[in-house]
Image 1 (tube, rainbow over the protein chains, first blue to last red):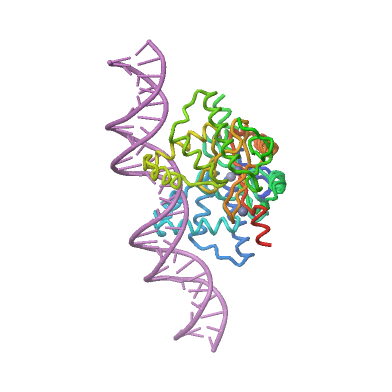
Image 2 (cartoon, protein in one colour):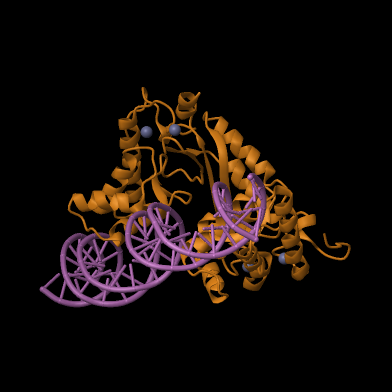
Length: 172
Length: 172
DNA sequence: GACCTATATGTAACTTTATAACATTGCAAG
DNA sequence: CTTGCAATGTTATAAAGTTACATATAGGTC
Ligand SMILES: [Zn+2]
Ligand SMILES: [Zn+2]
Ligand SMILES: [Zn+2]
Ligand SMILES: [Zn+2]
């Protein structure tokens, strides 16, 4: 694991840095090394396609459509049919290394994999960047709202659209 | 407005009755009459297609895909091309008469239109019914979670998947 | 090493969901 | 009326996701 002393590192901090100026080279390298550690720990195979998809998602704090990912893969000599992208994305999602953003039909790399978490997503409608916000309280409240109706919550998606600090500043 | 004395009526009660035994004929008739009142109030045209789409959605507390709605419309002599359904659904959504369930790529009628609300949705993975849960507290918490990152929340979707009371009972 | 099996990848074909662009209809203000 | 605008109809196409089957490759067994 890299040394973090001088860096803002989403993996090691809360909240998420997607909207803050930060050392993103470190940020993404760290997420990748965590992913590798996790895969080793779980006896999973972080194959070339899977690893490359994760790298592509990690390039920016944005969500990418499966077909955008696929185009990148195809350009690099991997298969060029949808299942190639979807399978890698599904794998990453199952392992908590990426998240699906349902409002965007798109995927984003998880910035702090390994830590059990079920974040809320903040989606900037201007710059399209996506941040994870801690959502333990929200999940608990949702469980409770369900329970009030006799409903057993098993999974949930909490997504907000709005303006990130930079885009809000630019608009004002 | 119908007399509610003897009925469970989602429009007049909280929480939602989708998962409870209730007089659904009243429930849907009430929602429709509220929609009509609302349209009149706002000077909007609840045209035959739009009204029919709302009726179709109101038949059950389920989410329907745009193409399911379209098939129904086509069978009844309306246009049979996607925009016919999407336009009506978009209109209903804008007016708060229907909601889009993003996890399902589907739409459901709002059971208490008119009242300002931004509900959380509870989606039963077994019977596919959808209920609206009050979510003022959740929205507030989400706004706050965004604010903590300098993010201005403008809209959000909160959706939970799980088991409704009846399906949970059947499984046990 | 040779073999077998499970997992992963490649590929073709297709389904489902959604939008863009333009023509037509029909009500409604003047 | 007639003129304009909102709604609907229609054609075509784009975007997102899945099914089914063939091929390749990693790991374990003998
Ligand atoms: Zn970063
Ligand atoms: Zn932004
Ligand atoms: Zn009902
Ligand atoms: Zn159910």
